[in-house]
Image (cartoon, rainbow, N blue to C red; front, side):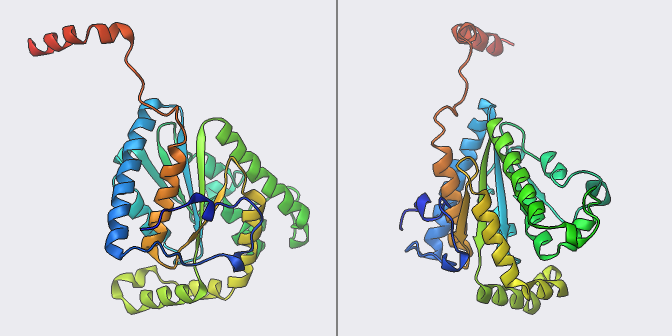
Length: 292
């Protein structure tokens, strides 16, 4: 099996999505990929236990991608061997009435993981520069002071929003949150295949909505705005990784490997040592327990 090399997926320079791969050959069978993922996620789970004991870092995993890109199943498979208390998943849907009474980052800010835990955002704060670019009328629902019509949603508005997102991520990174941002790069043909499967399999019908076809018709618009968002917000402290996702097993292995390799670079993440006074009395404490 080929090694996963982070530099093949990390966005360091401006990219064109049309020039990125939707599939990736790790030269491994499906069984080999599943075995490798199991091994990697167990290592991640153990690392999270250490992260919890260390108590100085949190990890935020952001997943974005077109409909059917495989976000739900990736979360299920990659985090399967984590301690249940160590990972919290948030799936962000259409903002509620309460959420609309706050700024658009509020609901994401209050969902951030505490130190020692992984937080997974299934769809993220980037929806606010993706869906709203394709459907700018949604911005009117935010009831902003300086936005009274679609004409007010100009390039200066988007420039400001991108800066707010960059500032948000810089702030949480400076305060101990390690950020991973994964774009699951699905081809249009593969999306068609997966949507047909939803229609053909009764157990998957519930996932289908006629609105999915309306959004698919806007494929090129979404790709354009994804490309812009990635290029404007991939920073050293919060880089984007473009994950070829036409094959789900391969995508899961790549995501898990990137997280493990990057987190292992944090040499200060280790379990705290006992106080010297407590260490010196371990034998005494052991005897007390035995004689209890």
